[in-house]
Amino acid sequence: VNPLPQLTVSSATVCKYSSVVLNALGTGTSFTWSPALFLNSVNGQSVTVTPAALQNYQVISSLNNCTVSAMVTVSVLPLPVANILTGKTIFCQNDKILLQGQGVGAFYWRGPGGFQRSGQTIEFDAVSNFYSGDYTLTINDQNNCKGSATQNITVNNLPQGYLGNGKLNGCVPLCTTLQLKQPNGSANLTELSWQVDNQTFTGNQFFYCFNQAGDYQITGYLKDANLCVNTV
Image (cartoon, rainbow, N blue to C red):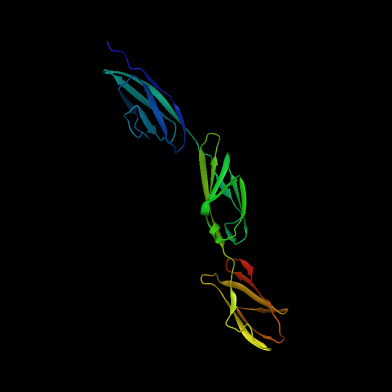
């Protein structure tokens, strides 16, 4: 008369969408698991399971044609719900970006170019359009389960330009037509004005006579289709 194999197996708890290894301990020489649902294999002393919800499994252990079975329960914990709040998603260069997380747990942020922060609310200056991209909030709860949310942010460069197509030095009186030149790929301008010697001109070009010798400062006020404003 052969003895029954010894068999011990412990229940497990896992976060949703994660995997856990189930180990059958004992004197058996073969182990069979059922049902096959969410299992990586139905044979073996150790199997990996990735259940979508609470799941019961039976394992049968054999030794010298004698068998014994045991039941094991895998409980599945819900993931924390993460949300990102932001007043807007399109910014201009040098704007402050404020992102606020919603959920329960510890808050971790990742973004473009290796960006990393922690805390429920983060604020930073978008000093260039390299801050454009996806920002992901991950919440780690008390069970070490993780939930995440992603928000896309766009940072537009400030409008830029320089005065060209005109003489910028010469003898008095110096009369010249000056025109704004923009870098390739710039957004269309919706507003443009110039100030020189306490006089204001509008449009991308203007004519002016410098009647006295000296150095003059010409200031341009630019606003583009992205509602970004700059002074050049």
